[in-house]
Structures are given as C-alpha cells and as structure tokens.
Image (cartoon, rainbow, N blue to C red; front, side, top):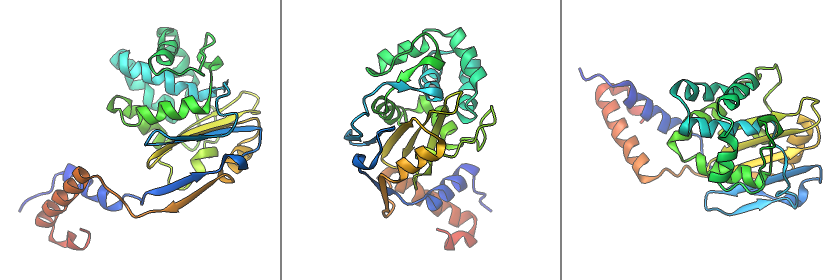
Amino acid sequence: MLKPTPLIVGLALAALTAPPAHALTFNPEKVPPRTQMTVRYADGNSVSTGNGHESRAALSLAKLYLGMWVLKYGAPEDKARVENMIRFSEDGTASDLEWKYPQAIPSIIGEYQLGETHHNGYWGNVTTSTEDLTRFIGVISGDPVAAPITKGMATAAPTAADGYRQDFGTARIPGIIGTKFGWSDDRQVHASASFGPGYSVAANTYGSPADLTTDVLGAVEVSPQAPSLPTPLQDARDRACAELKRAVPSSSQVC
C-alpha cells in the first residue's frame, strides 16, 4: 500500500484548513492622539494616522530589526536564537546579540531605508515609526531568510520571558497571522506590529495594553473573503489531495 509522506499530508491539511482571507479597512480619524497607527497593504499603499511618521520608542519591536541582521549576517549559533527572542521577547538574548553585533540595527536602518528609525546606541533606546515598521514587516514577510522572525511572531508565547502578557493591540484584529509586542519598563507605553493576509499593521500608544487594543479595534473593520490561493499553491494542494486519496481512501471526504 502506498504510504503518504508527512510532507504530503501536512501540505494537504494545511491547504484545507487555511483560514479565509480577510479584507481590512482602517479609518485613522477614529484613532485618538495618544496612539499612532499604520496599515500597509501588499500593493504598497498605506494608511496612517497623522502622527504615523513620528519616531516613538520602539520598545521590544526593535528586536525585529536586530533579528533580521543576525539572520542575514550572523553566526549559525546566533541565528538559532532569533526565533525564541521574538516568540518570548527575550531581552537577555537581544542584549547578547547586540553586544556581539553592535552594527546590526544601524545597518538594517540603512539597508531598509528606515528614515524614521534611530538606534541611539542600544536596542532598548531605538525609536521608530509605525510607517517604518509596517514597511519593514511587509518586506521581510516575503523573505525566506526572515522565516524565524515570522514564525516567532506567528507563535508568540501568551506570556513573555519577563512574565508580561502578550495578547493586546494589533494581535486582536481578526485574521492576524503573527505579532511582535512591546512595552516600556514602567508599563506606560505599549506597541505591537503584526502581519495578516495581504497587509502589515503597527500601533504604538501612550497608554495601557487595553488602551492600545481599544484604539486599534475601534478604527478597523474586517470582512471575511473567500479564500484566494495562488495558482502554484492550488496546484500543490490538488496534487497533495490526489496522493492522499490514493494512499488513504477514507480521506476522500476531506479533499
């Protein structure tokens, strides 16, 4: 009997259980002044609050910039640390990596032309804008090199390494795939950056996690759309289903 490979079964099931795409609309006029927010679509168009170009504290979102440099240019053993740095928002890992690679964040700022992002000598002092964040995430989300970052965002731990909850802001938008969270030591500033189907979104508030969530959700509308798979993925899905049916006849109802 033909046995299905784990790759074939996984591909078939992933294609079949993929969530529907969502159309996100954003009204920046509904966002109070304490919060800045940007939504950038896959076609390059973006919508921002009036303060979306303001360079605010990046908080732990700076780890996205640091992690990307390490994945592109760092030693293998350091690349292996990036995913958990993102997933658990590990400050210790970020400090270790920046000590070893002090050029990392300044280099990424230049390489990705992040004109509203400033290093200020230390990853914890980085300032950035939601405009820069969404553009950066939009670029790296399609880069295989960045897979540990996007995977870490997609599997963000409910509780960070320091015990803080990671469940606020843009992560609460229906259809979001992955999120990086940030908060100040005094818990007075919170930020998050996410990617969803066809867009990236970032927000930063002078307020609590609940304030950020309220401001984000009050300004967006999400409407479900029928799944739209690119032709190569659809072809792969069909081939996977065909092989799965041959190997496991009972799977016909699934495919």
